Image (tube, rainbow, N blue to C red; front, side):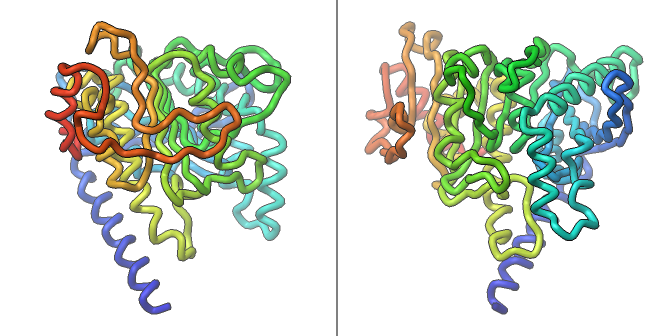
Length: 374
């Protein structure tokens, strides 16, 4: 017991020191915005680089999980802002931390909120409203927003936030209502999004998503109050039809590794998972929204697997036309079968096994040892 306590304290100290290390490079500001149309009041926290860039910077909007807040995934906001992004964390009334604070039967409160917000519609509408307000800041030449780039916007989320992110990226709503697609979205990060079975095929539901997408889940990522099982989290990735989509599956990762937890022996590993999520998400955002060439080579080569330090498997569907003049799908693991059975990951025995043409192998070899993105 004493040993476990020491391990937990050690990881918390390291995590706090890492947060403080970016304090000099990142600034933040809070707002409370009221959406009169939906009669919803949205708390917002915006992170941005302390040093104003000479060039415009991409904007990332992030939606928390059920029962969360604008502070639960601040580790991501700090990391992304330190890499040259403006990051907007928003809080969703009705499915935020206020549903359980001060309550006795917490699980019942979670279940009730989930039943009301399962379709993600109110959250997706919150994201669209927040994007409108961010654009207003840009139009008003607000000092910290003057360099925000309205043409390079990414959206991410965890749990119900992941669902909301996919909805504004084009996923067909499961409530059969109007589409929530927002053409301003250029890339999407979905961590542990719930999957709901409807009378539509999964391809019909997810095929409208045409922007690059990164999915993050874990082998133990079963819903706590919903019905989605860990092996079903990959359905959106498998059902999309466009290229430029990526799937990261953490070995042993459960549903709470993304936002962290308190007073749990399992928490001692959360910071390790979160550190890996920072590395792969930074790579994805930089490659897609900043068009960073080095990040793109790592994202689409074996270096992306190395970013995870053996903690996870990676699958991808990418269009390598520009690399080898042949449209080819590349994956670091075997494609998942239609019945969603788990597959074993086979690591290439040598760099020569990693596909396609000599040119592609050469650049893969060059960046195979890359563990970080400059």
